[in-house]
Length: 205
Image 1 (spheres, rainbow, N blue to C red):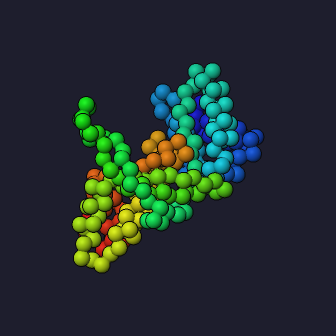
Image 2 (cartoon, rainbow, N blue to C red):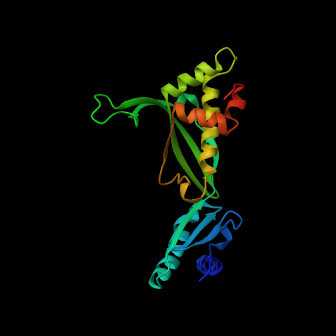
Image 3 (cartoon, one colour):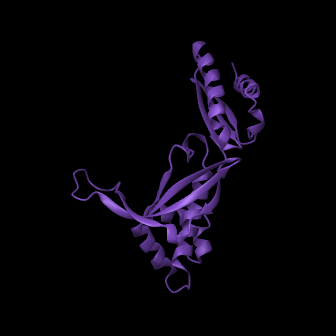
C-alpha cells in the first residue's frame, strides 16, 4: 500500500460522511514510513472534528486488521477572534514547573487572559496565563516608551496564540482538549525572537 492509497481511503470515508468539503487539502498531508503511514487531516470547521475523527478512525482500524499501521492527526484551523478586556483579567496561582519536588511553595502567580478562538462555525474560549514575572519583564521593556501595559500584554498574548495555532503535525495545539496555555519569561524571549511581538512593542527582542 502507498500513501496515495491511504489518502484515497480517507477521502472516501470523509466523503461518505459528508465531510470532505471541510478538508483543507493543501494543509493536509499523507506520508509513508518504514513502519507504517502518517496522515494529517486539517479541517476548516472545528464543529466537524468529531465526525471526521470517527470516520478516519474507521479507516485506521480497518488497516490495523490488515497489519498496516496508520498514525493520524485530525485537527482544524483556528483563528484568534478576540482577547478579553483587561478589566476581565484575573490573577491566580498556578503550579511552577520549575519548582523542586517537595518545595514548600510550588506555585507562581499569573495573570489569566481569556481568548476567544473561531474555526468555521465553532468557537472555543481558552485561557493564557501570563506569569507575573513575564508581566514585570514586559513592563521593563516598554518603560519610557509611552506604551500602555495592558496593550503590551495583549500584543504578547496575540502573537503567542498566533504562533501556537500555526503549529502542525504532532506538535499542534488542540484548544478544545488543552484550554490553558502559559507565557513565561522564557516564552517571551522566544516570541521576541520568532514573531513580530518585539516590533509591535517598539522594542528589541
